[in-house]
Amino acid sequence: MNSPSHLPSLPLVLFSFLSPLSTATQMLLPWEYGVRNLARRPVRTLLTLAALATVVMLVLVVVGFIRGLERSLAVSGDPDVVLVYSVSSEANIENSSIAARTPSLLTATLDGTWKRFGVNHVSPEVYSGTRVKTGDGEEGLGLVRGVTRAAPLVRRSVRLIEGTWPGDGEVMVGQLASAKLGGRPEAMAIGESIEFEGREWTISGRFSAGGAAYESEIWCNLSDFQNATKRQDLGLVAMLLAPGSTSAEVELFCKERTDLELRAIGETTYYQTLQQHYRPVRLLAWFVVVLVSGAGVFVGLNMMYGAVAGRVREIATLQAIGFRRRAILFSLVQEGVLLAAAGALLSALLALLFLDGLAVRFTMGAFTLRIDSIAILIGCGVGLTLGVLGALPPAIKALRASVATSLKAV
Amino acid sequence: MKMLMTLMMIGLFAAATGCNESKLVTGSGSAGHGSGTMNSKYLAASEPPGAIPVGEARQNAKDKDAVTLVGRIGGSSNPFIDGLAAFTIVDAKVTNCDDEGCACEAREAKDNIAMVKIVDASGKPVADDARSLLNVQKLSMVVVQGTANRDDQGNLSVLADKVFVRPTN
View 1 (cartoon, chains in turn cyan, green):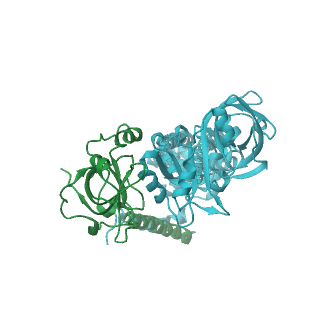
View 2 (cartoon, chains in turn red, purple):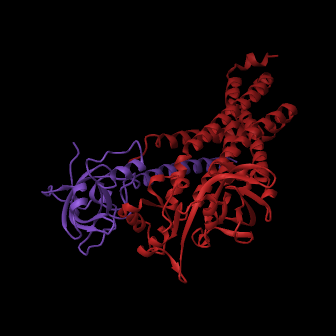
View 3 (cartoon, each protein chain N blue to C red):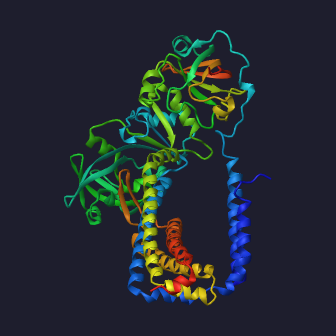
């Protein structure tokens, strides 16, 4: 049987540790000893608790950011939706321009589009980033999508949660649209006005999209948006595939008809491509987590070195009365881990209460911070690791000195 | 307390072993494109004679003509169709646009591109990825033998039953 070279040594290490441990457990310092030691210097303990809690909170914020970004891109793609847009725009759908007849050409040629009650589930759209000004004067870069009534048939996660579908001169806004613009949520309430493409628009409704990327968009009627932007073409066509169909047929059509200069991509593949674009951001975020965690280790080290320095004689006394060094080491590490665990739990509670679901503005839209089980696991794991790493070096240092010398220490 | 510590250690050991085993199991299944295996039924053992460049075929080949084309797999950033034995080939004279991207490829290949569909005996495209079926990749030079399919816009498709892959030097 092949196995990684490190695997045989792991059980040996663990089992060799077990037998002395079973004896040493009888000579461990009482649990209360470590707890009371933390209370001996309450100010220092509280300051260290605050510092560790801050470190874990920063880790939770960054991991929550990464998780929120990943989730936004993951739920934005429908595996049954194919996007058809211009071959020259590559992954930038905002720059795409295709002929207005493309939807009818696709539905006439392809059998794989879903059609129910005589309605093709095909959504012609124009998608563009533009300066949007709200009623209270705030201006920001908004994402506007011109759609028809077929859009919710294809964008199945979209739900109108308030108000009505936009008519002429009206728009409906996603739940995260105000976060994207950086304005007050009240400025994007129903009945309020916004301005873009040189026109004023009234907000007629609000929609949710299950956290998908278009939850930060502003939707209006396709013809209205085409008039405002003075264009007759489309940006893309989104098609819902019939059950059993795949995007291969659509891709084959686009590659065969080189005269149309179209390309087809599954929506999930499109958002996976976007995920790749944001890989450097995610890597940088993880690097920040490592840096912050490193800072936390130094906080723990500082606290424990200080705690141990004033207890040299006490530690020597414990050894003199029969407690093994291993037992004293465990007790010192216990103090560090207790404090770090308390800080981690406090941060996790605050993060869940105040940070989870907080909207974050980003280049491609907006998303919410996600303090989920993975974020909590990483945050608390970092906290516990800080407790161990921050306590071990000072504890080992304290135990190296000889008992006789330490007993005479001041 | 002793029992609890012992159980915790055993649990840690079991978790560590389990994680390593699952990595070993999943690692072996992740290689390669698609689910197909190279199929010699569609691969020609030797290069068919009389192959013409894609550009020339696009100008002269008529609908339903028997054609033999030679070209380079390319014409876009992804010339393959996922899940189908189909890909685009371009004339060897077309510049490879890896550095400039899709717009360059589309511009250069517009009049020198053809779609190749590997079909079975009934004339239907084979539902298998061409990369694994023929052991080809982007920029592979291939000689394709089959029937030309022209539409009113002049687009050329080849329903191929044999493909010869030129060895790379």
